[in-house]
Length: 308
Image (cartoon, rainbow, N blue to C red; front, side):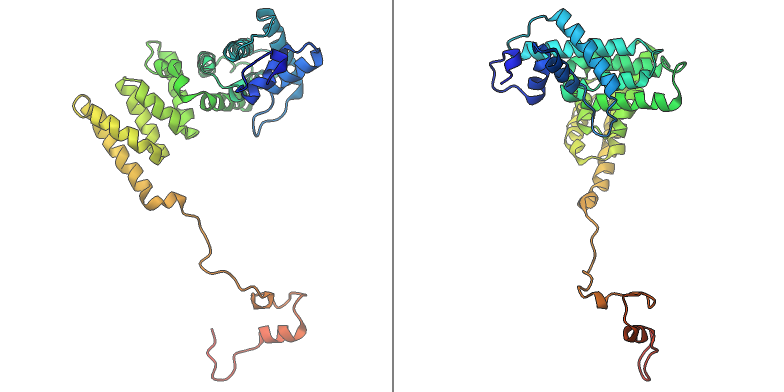
């Protein structure tokens, strides 16, 4: 139970319980809870200075909008997510600040630690800004690569059923925004985000978007996509013959790739080596080999013995 937020629901998740400490009456404890929300994702550097600065800004925005902590779990989560979205927005619209790529990376971390669909609009806007070169005049290519990888991780961390802004953007009338979302589709493919792609396949009705998703699923080759692809093939058999034919080919490719589950077969030795060390082949100059054993190793074949 999160005493600092006065939540009475015993089923509160641990990340939410930790973040509820942002309303703690002791400033150090509140700051520590906010820093926990921006802790590093696996494989990322700590960036403690940026984390502390971002946590301070998070607390300032949170206390201004919600002076009193909500008592129920849902409003508490909404307050934290809305504040994290505001902090992400502030990091997104300031490309000229020092270490802007690290500020964006840290601002995206709550997407991993406190997943919610409310981040989707801000993540899509971030993807659009990146695609149109918003940071290009200020950052080097390695710095831009950090932003791209952070966006890719955030897309995968979003709940699969919360990407409606992304799927709608794929058939937007705004050409630049549509192209940006297509680049995000390739990020999902590279991350093998099969569940997200399947959800998008079932959500959108646009022919071009569905065809692009089917191409991604074919390249991934995950057998989990076979069942939804077969259902969609039945649905489009009489209405979209071109897409139905593409799905049929994709199903055939995935089935061939996963025939007999070769992708799950582990390589192992055909026969275990001998346990006795002296039975293993060793160089004659090995200092561990006794002189008489060296003579045995270097001896020629005996008369009548077949030499190999």
